[in-house]
Image (cartoon, rainbow, N blue to C red):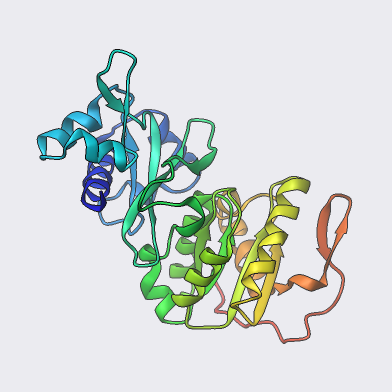
Length: 283
């Protein structure tokens, strides 16, 4: 099952790198994530073709049995009794367990909505996997602060900014599915420092959901910080001015407990008892 997921990830990645157009390519470009279309991108993002048996045919040719593909959550049965791809016409991002093994996928559709698309299997539980850790092991090992966001493209934007201005942060997306205790524990396991930042975004409901991540994170991180970037991280970093705005916001993130609800959102009304981290200036 692990081998099947690894093979599927390679297939999806190949399909995205081969693409010369289509909504998936345009979506990544419009969100400022065109670097994901480069072969040397650290983010293992791929594309599930809009065909009925593209993946199934490929994996069968590599020797995987139908039973393995079904158990791995990669194949469904059609009414005719034929095997068909479970994932079609989606951007696909690898989900990994606490050993960083590829156990499933998060899919992003044409509407931009990201969600876990792998069912519960013997190796996959949505509450026990994370995205972005394997892609940023070097950042986390060097002391980068995890920045928890909902949108995976926002996480990629945080990472891109981090690598440009001192490698201070590592974007970790939860894809709107919440953050479990197991995921918070996993994130702490791969983090050197004791600080984590939560990006509060997505309207009233999104902000409240994001703020709720602090409950589990506080079990494992001594300093839980929050920052409000209303326009969304990925949108904000698409320009030089936006990059500066996000950089300054992350540097000055304040304790989550100092935020209070105002007009459906959260705002910080108290000074940070810790001095803000001073990061490098950016041009």
